[in-house]
Length: 166
Image: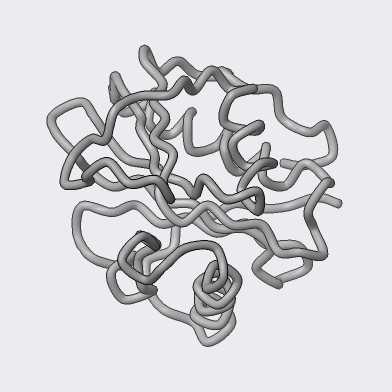
């Protein structure tokens, strides 16, 4: 599998459906107040850099970077299509996002993800890139349904890419 990652500047039906599927997939993992994924419209707002990975023109991954503070951004809306999981797509997207942040001088990346077993693979991926547990950050509050992770300093190539992803 070979993916092309591009910055998303405007909505497409396929990408909106992909993000909607992300929300649907998380419904059983935590109560609504503990699910922090952004709607597609919010992902397109100023201060957020949304990216999508495509395979043969179909979205297979998303990831976004949202400003928290000066030099600190949050990793948002990481998702890999179920049919593409285990093929290095998520790893390629994470590497791309880390490289994007590092290239712009971002010093710290943080994220909130679920603590449910559904998110075990995601937490393992983030740990493999050097993310470590941290306290709630930004507007978050401690929540038993959330795991908070951070990476500092942010340096390019913090995680290896799958050789088939580009």
